Image (cartoon, rainbow, N blue to C red; front, side, top):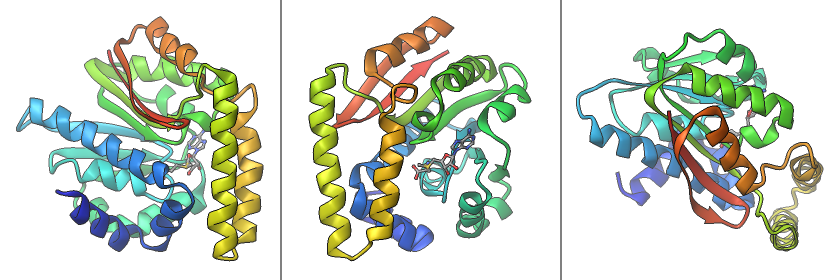
Length: 243
Ligand SMILES: C[S@@+](CC[C@H](N)C(=O)[O-])C[C@H]1O[C@@H](n2cnc3c(N)ncnc32)[C@H](O)[C@@H]1O
């Protein structure tokens, strides 16, 4: 599927939600596509084999759709502890749920992982979810992801990965804030602007930030190999790793 087709698919299925995200944070929309493309690549290396994906923080379904679009043989369990978010995904992605390729779980990520069998999942995929976790909770989630993946299974996460250079990180984040103001004042969405600024304070707090080197080492420490950060764009990047 080329970029234009994918774009039409997202706009059609996810609608207004996707357009708003693209306006405020175009890189966030792009990161979900990169997660989907990474899964597509995995599928191309193992044709005709079914692929089970555990998605953490499916939200309104943007990343979920990108994962489903990777190929017919992909099945997804999409986890999100916020019913209001997950209900939107349930509506938009009903077709895939009816086909039996998509199931939803409304429990929190760690609880779901703790109740998932060891070595039972091909891919853990996610976008913009892990950075929301408190560092201690995230450390437990990462150990559990390693446990539930099959040998050779993959961790694929498109997310906010903080720059190691803290001054550079601050500059990039300041530009990001300016961007929110420009985009949202223009369309008179001051309530959304307030929400994003308030949320950003949590993202940037010391017990949330996923600093690049620390995060990659954290994956290696639980046993992951081939830990790679790619597609860095400002504070966003795609991280993949293999069990
Ligand atoms: C920023 S959204 C990302 C949604 C989607 N992946 C995307 O990129 O558009 C993060 C989602 O993670 C969910 N979430 C946050 N903490 C969670 C947790 N501990 N367990 C499960 N879901 C969680 C939130 O409810 C939210 O829907």
